[in-house]
Amino acid sequence: MDLQNCNGSTEHQHQLPAPAKRKRTGVQQKVQAAALERFAFDAAVSLRQACTDPVSGALTMTPQMATAIYRLIGAWDTAADRLRVLRGRGLPASVRSKAPRSPAQIEPLDPA
Image (cartoon, rainbow, N blue to C red):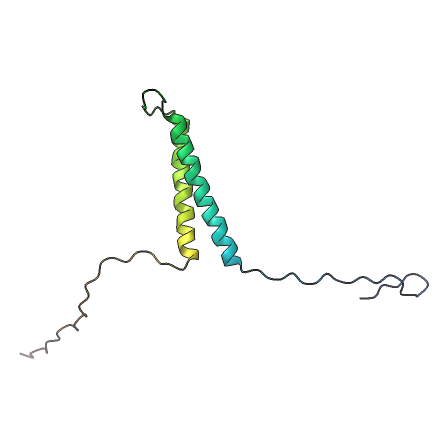
């Protein structure tokens, strides 16, 4: 694309930037989901350590801490599910018998 100044010369030429290379978004999403899953786990573990009394080992928790842990567990579950989908794995199937299914027995109607 040529730009001309007022006197008609083409001194200033602007080029469009080269198109960006398209990254495989699935790989980036997998890395992000794995990082978020790990972050949620690490945060939940650190909250557990913060709620544990170092002397007695008893776990004392405020309602705010319980809510934070509940939300971290939900975030971890969501990230783990997203990671499963991005890896191309389906939901676990129910247990199926290995014997092939036989067709239903059809009995003729007796016109009586």
